[in-house]
Length: 280
Image (cartoon, rainbow, N blue to C red; front, side, top):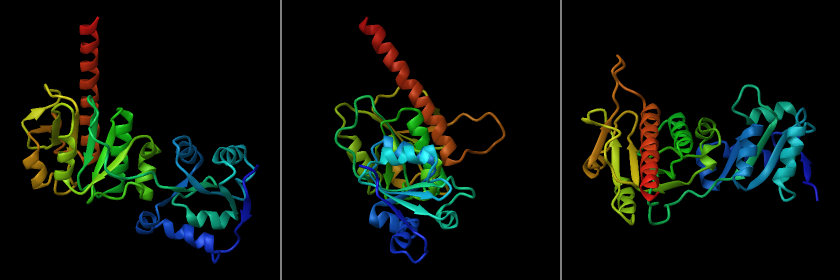
């Protein structure tokens, strides 16, 4: 059974207006629907198990092999909407859209299951406001095989259009957990079967990674302008800086997260190698 195809010609069309509305972050968050643009991102989302509602194709893209492949991948339950190129373009955030988009159900965003993984690595975004920063942090955590990204409620919505573009599909690859504040994160982290390490990025710290620490480990990155909250400073026994022998005064939140996430990944790899050698 093939997908149902329906044509939309007017901006006044009810479905079209509903799709325009979910491009606004608040409306997207309220409805639980997200808009994805471009073949690779749409394909990645479907392969990751994201549930599609509509497949949108422009006239110039509707008969392309990539569009037909995506239509088949989406399944018969997903309705395909065909739009004139000019109408499709008004939906998109890119200058030269590919003519392929999806409206999907946002993946679940909730507290993570107890307890944290025994050798888990977690990236905590505390009140991160810039969508590009958060998207890059999610992509970084995915690249370095972190177990999840944790968000406090003050952090930008992770399925914001700009976050999704910066994450380049990574927001569909690993769990995203939402907690009310850093105290709730710490309480969840303490449910681990063995004591782990809650640490925070702090340019005023006197220690650097790697140092001896216990896994699981959770790394907190604070707000771009204000840094760590008072609560995070009080909770974290370990605060780490990044060695910067050059002339730059600081790194932004996403860059700092990338450096420290890489170091934590290397630390976990080293522990696993040592453990395997001891077991031989």
